[in-house]
Structures are given as structure tokens and as C-alpha cells.
Amino acid sequence: MSDIKPFYTTQLQAGLGLVDETKLLLSLYEKDLSANQLYEKALDSGLFPMVSARRLRNIVVECFAPRYIKTGGAEYLKRLATHLSSSAINQLFLIYTATANEILQDFIQEIYWDRYSGGRDSISTDDAKDFVGHAVREGKTQKPWSDSTIKRVSSYLIGCCADYGLLSGGRGSKRAIQPVRIQESTVLYLAYKLHFDGLGDNAVINHKSWALFGLDGSDVREELKRLAKNGWLIVQSAGDVTRIGWQFKSMEEVIDVITQS
DNA sequence: TTAAGTAACCGCCCTCGCGT
DNA sequence: ACGCGAGGGCGGTTACTTAA
Image 1 (tube, rainbow, N blue to C red):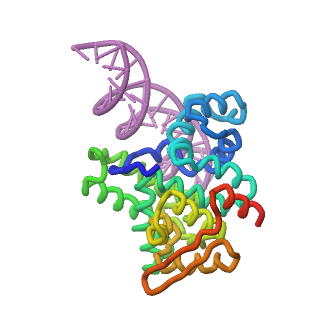
Image 2: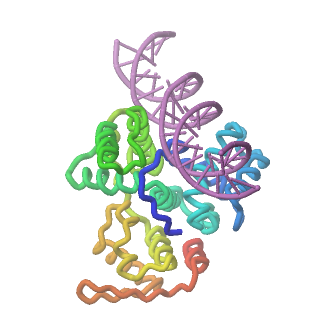
Image 3: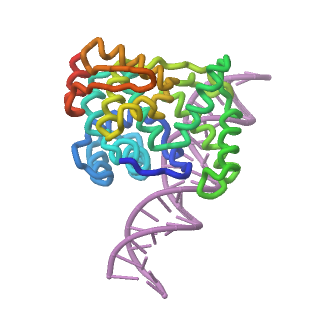
């Protein structure tokens, strides 16, 4: 669950957002299925006529499994995927993808929102290349990446942001920043997910996943107070210390609430 | 010690959008 | 209408682990 990922990897190159593929795989997923079992099931399902078996294996084993099976997210997202709007489910996909790919998390946190708050309205492939090149020089990869890998990973960061709606699509070297407003369902889901992962209240509020949506600790506290109006949790702040009263006893209850609202 | 298995990396090559 | 180049799918290769 809380695997430490010391190094940046090139795993994004196996697939970017894969939004449609992920939805299909979620529909096939059942609790406790392994990556290989899901792969076999997907192969037999005939839901992926457009890709080769080798490619399907890539998608399942290198993308879906690290994002949604290892983290335990698949069984919850399976229910949500059919109920939430595409922008709402994209936000959850983004959280899991950024958790599995540290380099994406850091890129969005350090470059995307920084440029946005600095008044820029676009991000270029060169911005991404600078970020990746810098990371390699700082030793954040297990071994130095070749120039071509640096170049490709840079484009994957941009492409992945586009898939999840953070940047405009297309192929221009400059992509327009499309800042996303975090959805209520995302706030509710993420807060409880972190809580059930065993984090204390302050650790929940300051978790880096919120930074994907440009939120810092005090922003998160405000978001949670809005949820409190629905009776979904209770927030008590005194100075810097925040205490949260959690109203639901399991993720299942949280999912029930989200699917009913 | 080595065969088998797995994760990470690399780069070919097809596709698609853009400019002319 | 078409050539060009960037983006990204795809599959092979390398390097590292694990088990016998």
C-alpha cells in the first residue's frame, strides 16, 4: 500500500491516461483478481479487439495493475466508474496514476500549478523536458536516462495531463492550461481514502495528492468544511490543529453516499 | 551457479495533425 | 492534396531477482 518509490521510472510510456481502457478493465475486475488473471479475462472478453495480446498485457500489467490493483483502488472505482461524470472519475484516475508514477505527481505539483499561479496560460514540451532533464541530473532516476527517453517521458507527462483534462489536447508544442476545480465527490473520496489508509487528521489534510488539484493544507480544510454541511464529516479547527470527526466506517459507506448523490 | 522469471528501458515505426 | 514531424503504441532487449 505505502510502497516507497525512490526513483522515477519510465512506466508512463506503457500507456498514458488510458481512460476508456481503464473503464473497461474496471468493468471486468473482481475482488482479489491478480494482474495476470485480469489479463486473461480481458483477453477472453473480446472487449479489446483493437489491440494485440502483447499490448493488452502492457496495459493491464504495467498500467492498470500498479495504479488500481496494488493500491486496492479497483474495487471501489469499479462501482464509481458507472455513476460519476467523466470529469469526476478522471480526477480519481489522476490520483491513482500520480501515486503510481511519482514523476507525474511531481510534475503537476512543481511545474503545472507553479506555472499557473505564475500567470502562465500554457505549458510547452520544453518545460517538461527541462523538468525531466533536471530530475535526471539530480539523480532521481535509477540510472541516467538516454536523451530519447528524456524526450519521450517529457511528452508522456504532457500527454497524460491532457488525458485527464489538465491540459488541452492536440499536438501543438504549447498546451493550454485547463485548471481543474476539484469535485465534491473527489474531496469526499480522497479524504476518506487517506483516513482509512491510516493517516492522522493533519497528515490527511497535508497529503500531496491534494496538490494535484492545486490545494494546500488550508484549502483542503476549507473544502472539508463544505462537506461538513452535508453531514459527511465534522471539522474542528483550533489554530493550526484540525480534528476531523469521521462519520463513515468504511469505504463502502463512502461509495454508497457518492453513488446516491 | 545458472536457469527462469520479472521489471525497467529503449527505439522502431505507424498514425495523425499541421503547414504549405 | 500531401509531405513532414511529433506523439505514442507496441514489442524486443537488457539488467536484475529469485529459486533450485
